[in-house]
Length: 81
Image (tube, rainbow, N blue to C red):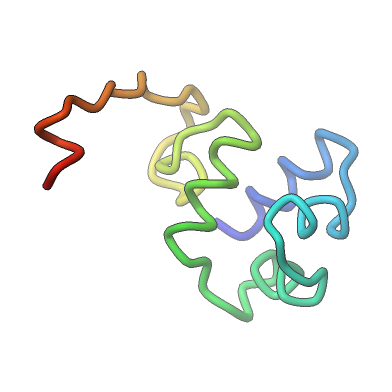
């Protein structure tokens, strides 16, 4: 998983500093995600998937398919739960 977030960042010609700013965290903290020193929290995985336009399954190495799933619109009933 960790190499995928590094590869995606490098493919976009972004620095760790640029991504860490998008995530609202330090470069050092983000670097620990890329090296596998720290586990990536779910909220960060979601944000990375949106930044790179890939599925979380792709980030986690569960598929080689990058395409994101269609977002499900939330109904009033879902929002109140």
